[in-house]
Image 1 (tube, rainbow, N blue to C red):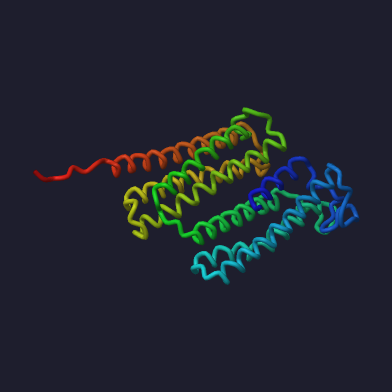
Image 2: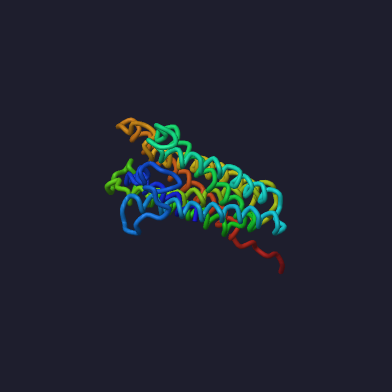
Length: 279
């Protein structure tokens, strides 16, 4: 739900629908429910409804984490997601009230804050899910996570404004963030699993391999987040920033490929038959 909300918010902003509803919030053009036809008012209203439902589910996740007997880090991640949720709602309200409650609310700073806080909430929910599942650091899980990251980075490159395979339309922007966030999720899972291996919480992957995978995944994530930020109009996107975007995209892909190679090499070594002594 949060990933879908992220993409829906990007689509709403890219189509200009975020400035619909006569810059009102929580009403939309003096109505609680606008006309149910595809128009800017409806797109903005639907985004708000989806956000409201998702917000209640995030609160529910935190409640479940506390009542379900999960460990402290799971409860902490879920609780932090709820703690910063009001800030996200407030910034979201400010960005759509250019001539309403807050004059000049739609600025680069509020736009950036809205994006960054949304990414933090998504990250915290991912951590709560991974820690709550307690899947450990099995090579199979790490390979799957890195594989998802690789596919996500490649797919995001197709829709990225840096590569320009396709027109960076509102639909392409939404697709870029769906793919980028999927890659972000995979890298988080890889980092969490590798960290467990470094700490010796699981014995099916050696600490050296886990440490290398964690470092490569962290670097790939940093580069990927850079591309996610540059996907929005937070800077004047000229030739310089396009080059920066290309470098970040290439680094994210190269580091994720490195993590996949390390895991594959480790699997090959561990899969080598051991001779059995005897007569």
